[in-house]
Length: 432
Image (cartoon, rainbow, N blue to C red; front, side, top):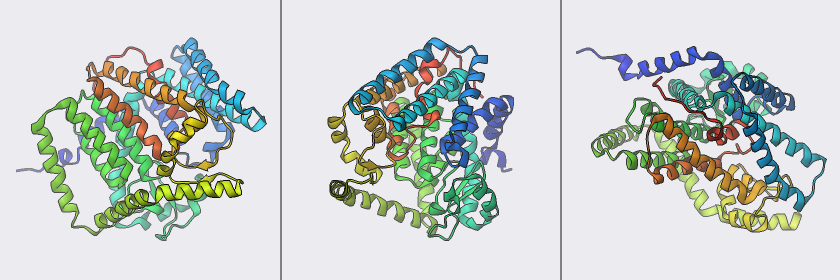
């Protein structure tokens, strides 16, 4: 009996994806550039010149693919209406004006990107994330075995990345080693950060892409899902595991193929039992347990303490964790139901969802839910399927939940996904 290494390593599917990238290499390169800006690790990512250049390049590409100016105008008018109330309520100064203009340029760029890719945005997004997830797995296990092997990238990392790349983490590793398609995070050297800045951010991209894959493959089991599952497991991120549970629930409820599901569960349990014998897993499980206990016991206390300090000092925003801000979600909506716009708020956090609500209030919640609802309706048309309504609503939840743990509320790629259904054209999906 011969062992088929290509089949075990799922190499055929990977090579198929690489061929798809080769056939449309320039559009994939442009999308990967958007991934780089989305990850926000390069020094140039925050430069105004790059923001404007990206807008012009995106416009050039969109115009070549029959851009719909009426739709773009409608999006920009909607943006103007959303910011109108905060401007009336809180005024406008030069700094705020620059920020509002910056947002306008980002949203305009997102319109161009969505208009350029149309239906292909989701197909290419999923394929590119899959390839990067596949690449991350061997690089991650090499990182676990000997993280210092990536020290040779230190000069390049310091040259290309933000100043944080030079910091030394408690593990003794340089905070970030950058390999373009993979990042070693010194603060999480036993976890997989993939091509993003940290494991939770990588988990966000994996969860979204896994969800797109389920729709595109018509909720049938597919080898790509194995790679996504392994990559998700290696992030050791509580948030990512929550998204994974919801993804499994979506797959289960739509598919209801109990035989395959039982086999899958048995396989996952066997792998986990084997891995529990390793010191590597013990350390990560202990880390996640401590984090969960810390959130459960201290988030509200820290919030109260920060709130009291703000009242006493009233000097600058107080940094609170992602979960703490969820305790004051109601307070935000009660104080400023239409948002505060670009005015300074008393808390600072990586909770992107809360920061969106702080700026735009109830309207942005409406936009998120409605946009993602039609988002999945469009993807369903690609795959020629009719998912149940609660499947679509759970999918919307999977798209929104990662915002709680990731501050991507002002990123072009985030807006491009949000506007996807508005610019997508009719398309018949064919397998890669």
